[in-house]
Image (cartoon, rainbow over the protein chains, first blue to last red):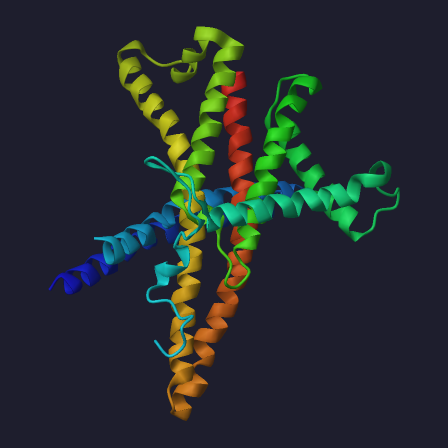
Length: 74
Length: 261
């Protein structure tokens, strides 16, 4: 019974990736918009976009951490 | 899955810390563990790399491949420091450069070393990344106090805030400031651990499908195998990216502490 509850908890924790996917799509959509407006700043904008992606991805990975915690630690 | 002794029992077994030379002083655990071994390997790797490039008076004028690599890394971090920490003379900026360079190189080589099969990723342990981020956070706060004295607390109240809102905002800013130490370490740890666990789980699928004696599963094992290939490429990118993000965030926090917005 505990194993079943653990699996349900781990599966539910994965729903949080939806918000992260929206966030990352947002970042890169802004990159495309800004490069279309001002192509000469493409390289610097790409640097900022990669920074934004990494920061958003960090929150995205809290969900698998919780899933692993529920599955293997408790 | 128990056919070959090297198969792990759970995807998290690769993160196990094994004391190689157990040393205990009373209740303190001073053993030489496998993270210690791999940290020593990382340090020796990039120190030897830089040493062999810069001996004999600092390399050739026309660089060979290794020297180009070292110059690339050095230049990259130098530009990072110069660009992020604004408003200071060149001398003062160079003060922070060695620390940031060593942090960046250590994290870069630690992460890349974890990509070697059957090796150990040092930064996939929360304690190690938390120790690094927490100590750097304390260092940056000390730098801020050293430069501004008690005026450093004005960092917590941005300009142009109406007075009734001020106490809540100060509290919020204080919590957000203290959370930086945690988030820096958690980001690196989460990326490394999640990436490696994912690759382990998918390889487990591919191996299980490969070992079943039916031709359908044998061909079907190509699916997880290609996903593992793609994921390993992503992991390599994430390894380099996370080292860069750690370093650039340290530069941004340093800029915050020195320039107070």
